Each structure stands twice: as C-alpha cells, then as structure tokens.
Image 1: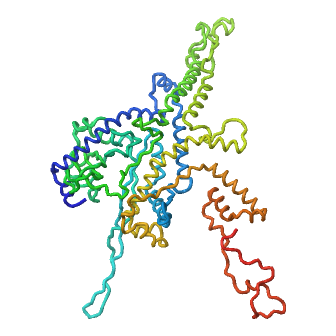
Image 2: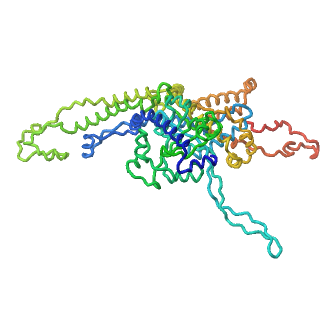
Image 3: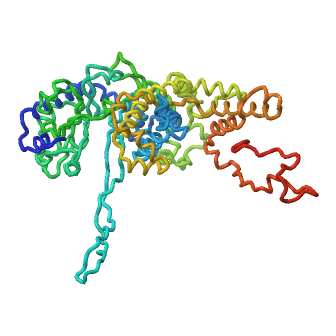
Length: 629
C-alpha cells in the first residue's frame, strides 16, 4: 500500500470514496449471504447426520433413570463419510508428494525438482495433512470445501554477536572493539499460507452457481478477530486504522441477515462491548473495481483488488491483488459439481433418510426387547408377594398361607410374538442399498463380502468398487487442488528470495534460482505448468509390478529373448521397486572400488616379467558398467 492510501485508512473519519467502497463490499456480501444462507439449515442437518445427534425424548429419559440403553442413531453416515475422506486422502498422498509437477516445455525442466521441494516445504509448514482432511470432510458433509492461499513472510528476532570494529587507541596502536549480542530480525518463513474457509462464511457472486463461481465479479469470506489480534496485524503493516474501529451495533448486526460467527453472536447477546475487548467481524472481499472511481489510482479500467472491511463500516485494507497468476486466491472443491444448482448434493444429503430408516429399525428392535422384559406376566396378588416383583428381584416369592394349588394358578408368562425379530436383517438390507447408492461399499471400506474369490476376481471387484470414488477424487483434484498448487507455485516463482530458496533446496541447486525466478517476470504470466494426478490404486500398482516382475524373470532366464527384445532390465527393476513403494534405490547399489594396475593385469603369468607390457588376464570378462544389475 502506498503512503497516501495508508493515511486515508488511518484517518479518524474516512473520506467519502472509502465509505463508498465499504458500502459496495457490504452490499455485495449481503446479496451473497442472502442466497448462501438458504443452505445453512440443510448444512446443520447434514452435520447432525454425520455426528449422530438426536434429541432425547421421554422414553430416553426414563431409560436413563432405569440405567437402560437409550435410543440411538446408527452412525452409517460417519462410516461412509470417513471412508470417502480416507480414500481420497490416501489417493492424494500415496506417492509421497501431493503435487508432482509436469513442465510444459523443456525450458522448465530444471525447475521441476526445486518447484516440488519448495511446494512440499510450504505444505509441511501449513500442516497440510490436517488441512486436507478438513477440506475433504467439508466436501462430504456440505458438498463444498473452500481453501484460500496467500503469500506471507514471517520473521522472528534472534540475538547474534555484533561485528567487531577496528579502532585507533590513544597510544597510537589499533585494537578491535569487543563483540556484543544484538537483536536481529531473521526471516523464519517465506511462502504460501493456506487457510480453510468455513462454507458458512464463504460468499461468492450469487449470479453464478458454485460450479461457475470463478466467473463472478467478486468473492469474499468473513472471519472474526479479537481487537488485540487486529492490532498485531497493524504492527506488521497488513491493516491500518484499527484504533478507530467501533463495535458493531445491533441494527447493523440484524441488517446482515443470517450470520454464523459465534464470537460476534455472543457479543451481540451480551449487550455493551468494551472497545478494548471486542470481537471484530472482518470481511475480506476480492473484487473487480475501477481504481479511479475510489481514488486508488489513475486506471479507468477494472482491476482485481482485495478490500478488508471491519464491522461492515470501516475499510482497514485496500490494495491490488497483485499476484501474477491473476486469479482469485480461493479454491473450491465439490462432491457433485452441478451448474443447475447453487450447491449440489453431498454424502450426508444422500445418506440422511436411509440412516433414519436404519436407526428406526434398530431402535424399534431395542424397544421391543425392553418391552418383552416387562409387562409380560399375569399375576394374582392374593398368592404372590408383589414387592419381589416390583423390586425386580431374581426370585418371585409366594405369600405365606397362600393355597397350594400350584404356581401356575397365580402367575403366568404370556406368549409374546416379537414383530421386530427381522428388523436387524431389514436394517442390513437398507445398509446394502445405502452402499449401492453412494458407491462407498464394502470393498472401499476394506471388507469383502462372502464367497470365495480368485485374485483376478478380487482385483476386478476392487477396481469396480473404487471407480466412482476415483471419479469424485479426480474432480476434486482438477477443480481445487491442482489450481491451488498452480497458484502456490506461481507465488513462489514471483516472491521467493534467493536466501530462502537456497535454504530449502540446498546449495547444489543454487544456480537454478535465476531460471526459477526470472528477472523478467512477464514470462511467468500465463505459465502452463501443471500437476500430475496419479489415480492408480495400490492394488492396481501391485498387479502392474507383478506383471513386470514376471517379464523380468522371463527375460533373465532366456538370453535369446533378451537379444530379441531390447529392454533395459535395470530400468524395469527400478519401476517394479517404485510401484512397490521403494523409491530410493541408490542405497542398494554396489559401490565400485578403484581399479589398480594389478587388477587389470590379472594374476602374474609364470615366466612373464613383472614390468613387461600390460596384458589382461585370460578369460577376463571386463568391468561391468556403473549401475548395472
């Protein structure tokens, strides 16, 4: 941000142009919130389906008092969603790298390895495993997962010794000043920051469906900060004018419509808010605007800007988006992209009604068993001591002096026909229907149905069972993860410093910095480097490795075939080991020992002079090439 804009942001009363910009952001987000909030109640239901939440009724309260099991929700949605998340998670992580770079041209070939190393370092810094899990979980529950990437530079203060200085002493001789410890700011991280955005707080342009959200003229999200956290951002130079942020009033809060910000909601319900201890709603909106209209620059054509507004009233940040990739910094993945719906269906939507049926069948069976234990006897109190019955004693005692006419004259067990005896079998049928509907079946869950199968049949069943899940995983990767990786790579090539580059990729790759981050960054605009997504399952890789292994055995056992088929056996073995999960074969290679003259000459021949002409030993086969198998 330039100094003029910073002064405008820090003014106690912001000018009309900034006020107009704040109103534009507020109006855009309000329109989007009005449409997105239509899904909030459905998402609440989906989350309850996933977590198995249900309200206790009178029967449950009575069972709780009697120390008996209450009715429950059979957690089929939890099992199905967790299986889907685990399948996609392991599929994306199976090769050790989430992003495997494929360069578009030979000129980028040298950047492949360093690009992958930098990306992996960024992912580790952002704890991407947990980020990926949360992203996939949101997709399965709500049909939408949102992540945002931005460039950050983090530093910390470290005490280092000062450099000694040469001084001339009074006696005319030179001396060095003693060193002391001084604080120096050191860069601790330089790279991409990945944030998860809750679907409840994501606001794309409502003129388009989520499937076409990139076509919109704006996209935004909301988050809440304590005022102290905002002041820390101000000290870093990210936002300005925080001292003049006023608490949101009830009128502004109610005018927003349905808002899912827990901290702000609690503050609104509490009443008066201390300005030094308030929660602040920060709306970040990335939009296309004409800078000249808002006093941001001389440009009279639309440009992508990022604007942050505090409590719907005050602009605290405004600057060009500035990324060479030229795109919004959000990425959205969906379980079922559908351009004819605002947000399509997800696993929770599909499973909810079927899970209710399974839970009903299970609970009705539970209630029936409970009823069968009570109220199933006819008792004549003239001959039976009722206190032993009412106290649920294991012994039912007859009264003293009761006539000896036989126990069956005073107490009789009723014949009880249990209509719910087949309910568990019916529930199993419904669960099979659920697996057929969702595609998350027994094979995906790591279970085999009954019956004997050959290895070929098992492989075919696994491939068929995973086909639908692989299709969804492919869509998620191409719609969200690959674009996110492309933006992260572009940000690295735009902003990484040589010092941090060398720190991550090593001194042996230092010379690649000039090609990775060219001086003329126009060459990075429109870069077409993309990432490979290997959707081959581990079971399929095992089958391929077995086939190649049989080929190697056939080749090595028949020299004639090896001559007819010009195949490199060493490379075949490397590919087999890679498919088996062993990627670093260098540690298994035999290290070649230096060859001296005596080894070349072979054992001395009787009668031959030691210093005669060198000759190879008879029958010598020569030296094997380096790396030969």
